[in-house]
Image 1 (tube, rainbow, N blue to C red):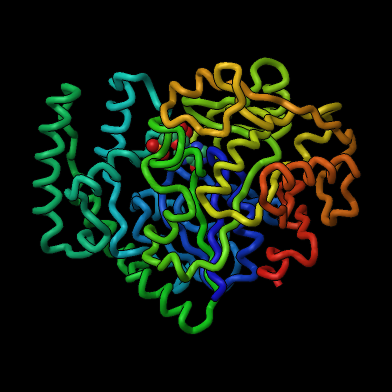
Image 2: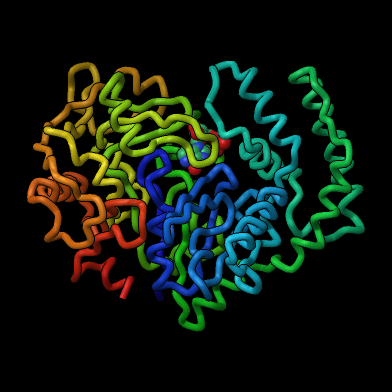
Length: 433
Ligand code: IMP
């Protein structure tokens, strides 16, 4: 069985879009398991830049089958806009893009509630993407959400949504003093039902059937381990399971069927939104990395916070996900530095600790212990073999391997597909052959 999960090892934006697009050449099915159009997977291909938010980035490979699984929260407006954009770029999705009938719907009032909740949050803002992701997952877990299958059942959809709007409006009025404006909402969703119908399937059954027939499956995680609802820097997290286990629950694919978990990490660290970030770099050096790495959100355009590679965090991520193989991205962003600090451990109350704090406030007491590695001061942009990398860049990667406990099976040295190194003889190379 070849069923591989690709998961973000940090706070999202690790470059999973490019990695999945690259790997997709060697797989038959590519499936998204969780999150929604808060994700921004950027792929550069033939000089064209694609930002995919809902559709798995494997769609850019002709003939591949792309799946949006039941664990995803689905905004039909965003979906239709994305397939229109793909059609404009002459990418044919017909017969190879499927949406789970069990995926929960996002409605405009989820966005309204996302913003109202952020503006009124007792503990301060989370810095969400304002896409209604959290409120839609709240309704799912509150067992009042509506799913894609409900939208297609056009005879009962109106009554179900109108009842829900009444309930949500009462809650919103009581909590935030603003009722929900649902003018035209039911009709606008019903109008989309027919366009969406042709894409809808029981995707769990599809995936299992495909696996049974010996097809290969690639599961594309969104966000990253430290944004996971259970294992991340709660409450500064997203509302879904962004760790490897989320691929199983989010797709209805048995954990025993997963053959490999691949973690994607930048050669440094970034995060968007609020919340703990032990190795954050403030001031000029952070700004220099932000500019060189074009660290601005693919979905919201927000400037990403930048920091040094955090190895305790990577070890934690490898533990939670069971990652044996890593992909290191954006190595070229560090090309000009004379020396590169790497966080090798945490100190709390002057004592070394291996624990990740359970409370966000626990990170206030955490101090990073840094080791400075020599920079290579040579361009690695576009390098496609290990031999082309400067010796000091290779030493940096070897240090990461040794310290994180996972092997590096792929290195990205630029946004283009061919700016990728896959050292031969590794498990990753075998998966791609
Ligand atoms: P939400 O997912 O919109 O509720 O946002 C919750 C947190 O997750 C915020 O800090 C967002 O910036 C972050 N977030 C959500 N999606 C992504 C992503 O795709 N990349 C990076 N951060 C994300």
